Image 1: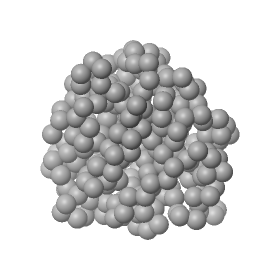
Image 2: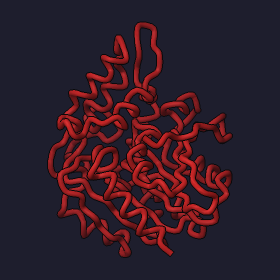
Image 3: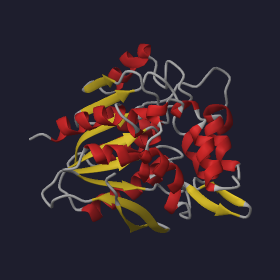
Image 4: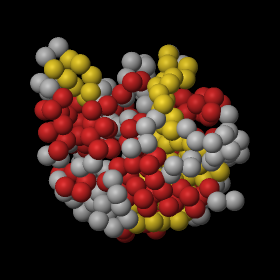
Length: 293
């Protein structure tokens, strides 16, 4: 496993935790943005697949080692990442976003067209389709078990591991890897009677309410100038078809971003499209193609 070096970057309100997988000074730089309840460790498998690249992945505010930072919202995350870009200092980066992180990535790419050379959106970044009659401001029906996990206290690290091990997304033996194990263990914070997820439920609720076609997000999508690749998973958070983005929605995505290239990875879900093989390898192929001279 390729291990990151952890550090912090000062942003509004405090210190943003940042993981860096180092590489040679002349190596391409990838800025990687995780999903709604996730962390920088979402990119362990991708970092393994890209040994010659410098990968920079923050824990977004309200998550993991940045969960003490106040506030949330896609625009705030984008402001934090633009500050991180200043610190990274690279003239050009490839920006990779997974799930909600892909929404944040679109805002950053739209605001930094000279610095962001290409954009890779992994099963996210386009408005989600809410079921009829569902209140999108309430994360419980939208995220289901994913959100419920945030309010639970687990008696031990092993209990939290078993919770994840039973999740439909990781039911297959091939999808429970050392990298997924490391991701799960990184996500824990001590609680009075055990451990709980490090993701702040209030921050998650604010962010998820903005994933259904917020005006500022649609404006950012329409203004993108970079090459954009959308990597689609055919199954969703609970390993269910057709995933977050049904195939019949692809013309809608192309209308928003005409230069979009769509890559579908067979036999993966919303998690495994990034966090395990073969998904991580396919995303790595896309990133390498984006960084060729």
